[in-house]
Length: 228
Image (tube, rainbow, N blue to C red; front, side, top):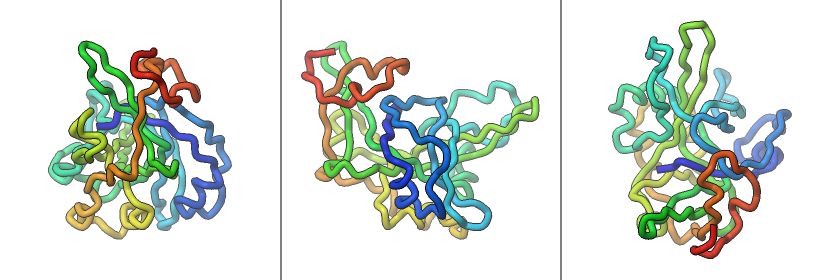
C-alpha cells in the first residue's frame, strides 16, 4: 500500500515531466511527510486534452454518496479489481491522474515496534504514481475533488515489508495513463506490474515520521535501526 510519501520536485522539472504548457505559477513547497486527507499535487488532462497540475484531497470520495459523512477516505485502490469496484470503476475509465513523488515510506516490524523505511529510486529521479480522481458535491453545495493511488503486488525490495506497493509508472507510460480518449480499463492492465526492485533503494529513517505533525528534511535522512 502507500500511506505516506514525499515530494521535493521543483516547478521547472514538474513542467518537463508532465509536458505542461507553462511552469506552474503556484508554490510547490518541498514536503517530507504527506499523509491521507491532505491536499496533494496531481497531473491530469483537461477537456482540451492539455496536461495541468491541480491540488486534490488524498483519499477518494466517489461522486455518488449523498451523506455528509461519505465514509472513510479511500487512499489506495487495488489495480487488479479497480474496474469492478463501484467506488472506482467510473474513475478508472474517465478520471485518471498522475501523482508525483520523491519517495514513499513503509514500516518494518521488529518485535512490537514498527520501524519506518524510506524507499526511493536509486538515481533520485521522480517517482510518478498511477492515480484516479473523482468529484463529490457535499449537501451544502461545496465540491470536493479527491484522489487515490493505485497499488500492485510488491517487488523484491518492498515485499519483506508489505505485499502491496504503489503502481509506479515509467515516463513513456504517462501519456497513455492520462489519455482521455482511452476509456477501456483493459488497455491499462499492462501498466500495473511492480516497478523493478533493483532500480530502487530503501533505508531506515527516524521514527519522527510516525507523526503527521513532523515535516522536514530530517525525516528522510538515513538512521540507525535502533535510533528514533
